Image (tube, rainbow over all chains, first blue to last red; front, side, top):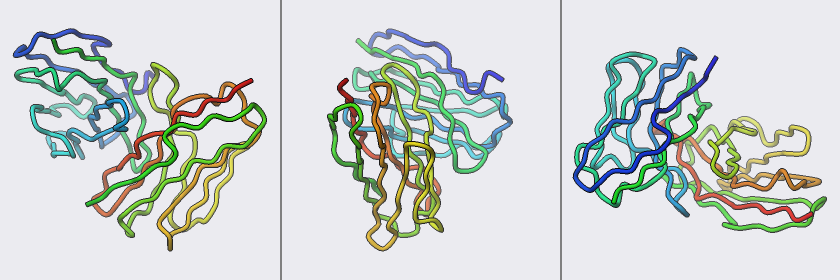
Length: 110
Length: 111
């Protein structure tokens, strides 16, 4: 089992560009999450999904969109990147409360 | 709103000493409290968790205690080793069902 994987590992964007981050899990988990991690701020929830075809807003959803077309995949989109979105993005999945994290995507917006 | 406060933000101990990290939560309905360890450049990994119907849980050198009345929980690491150096995050699941994370504690164990 690969667990939770994320693509890409690292990306540099210019302000205004768009991109999609992919999260995949092979554990048949219903719940999936996207977090961002910034120094001194811990992990903050962007969006989450409680099952295929569903999404919901987390603590910091502005500037991001998500889609969960397949149970195993959760996509995070940035339509028009801003320097404030420079961060490390972690995806996680869970069956119940325990969340398992992916390796992260480091995003730099210039 | 729902929040989790974690202290201290940095902690330095000598190898072999104990380390204690404390967290407080705001929602009394919170019922699940995991602790994650994150090594530099790596993903957060669950090291121990506790549910609200239990006061203490131990796994080898790590233990977690929960005081529901005071709404705080703590991570205890005994006989610390250099490989324990990492950032530790506490979290709580309030009535909304979503995990709320503390700000993290950077633990440094000096040989």
